[in-house]
Length: 129
Image 1 (cartoon, rainbow, N blue to C red):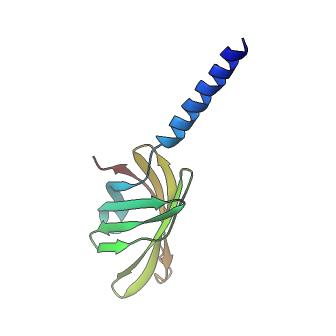
Image 2: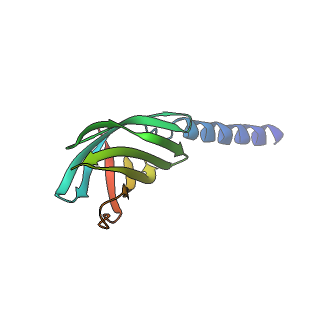
């Protein structure tokens, strides 16, 4: 009886460890669309996690730029991108959750838009295959 309990506990621990090891990784290429002032905008994000630090690049119709202040804690994801458009400098903040092959994000924009700051936008990126 004792041996069966030990075997059952060991099997449960191994299953748990395997689940943690094979949990979805954020590393890789993510693609999708997000609504912008001129309509839908294609977006490609390449991410790499090192512990809780998240690095990578974002590419859209404005070009490619490095992400900054990136973090991943569990399935919580956050990063920022600095941009400039028509002489206005602003920071785009992305926060959301990793859910398997989907990255569900909310985009907010920080900066001076003459009182016309766009509202937060929710969108989903999918892992590129």
